Image: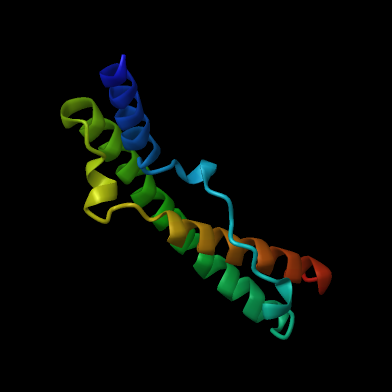
Length: 111
């Protein structure tokens, strides 16, 4: 009974440390005031650059999630998370920036 509980707890710990999919990552709360001092052109330029960054990070995060799933299946270890492939923090920050810039753009009436 005790060993079954320990195995279940170990499995839960391993699975909870797996890299999340990008769509499951919540954006960091960044105030739109960080971007309202920029012109509409500057906001749009920064927004386009950040969307490219977010797409790249999301792709890398998907690869990390796939690697973790594969690693857990084969050896019981989320390999990408252990080796630093997890980009959850960077994806969350990038999502927050995109969201803040979109809100700043809308509040300024940019097209």
